[in-house]
Length: 230
Image: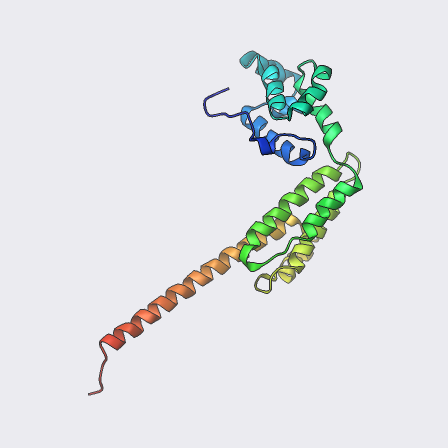
């Protein structure tokens, strides 16, 4: 599979039955690197599949092996006989069996989002954590007919803006931008604005520190070499 491609996740990331959402994200990354993701998810056209098969005749067998390799032994054996080495079928069965669709699991994601404490000391890490949780939850609740995640996305964005530390209160600025373009605030837009504010804040602190050092240096020089009125 190439010297620089490691198809095996570490043990803590392998599918164990309760970590499907995170596992799926890791597997998506693996398959995108290898070029198998569209095949595994049945998004590949027949023409593309035929072309790829000529280049990589073992691709379906390899993809199946990668999925099995990254499942707990009990999980893999549970579906092995039903799939006949078909990676798309195995992927589909795992999703149907393990994708959490109950209100309890959705509530768990919401609780993790809305219990996140936004402090100045770890603001960037906190908002990125909320962004990832919200993305997973939005993927979880979407279906073909409705997009409840659109509303959820705006709700999480507003919650973040309302609960930002005082130094980063951006709700007025972002809300004004949304009104100008007649749209609801989005989580990605809120994150973008917050990251910009964090960067500007760090730059201001650096400028202030530089100015302080220059002032102190100037005062030291005057102390060592005082000037006297003539």
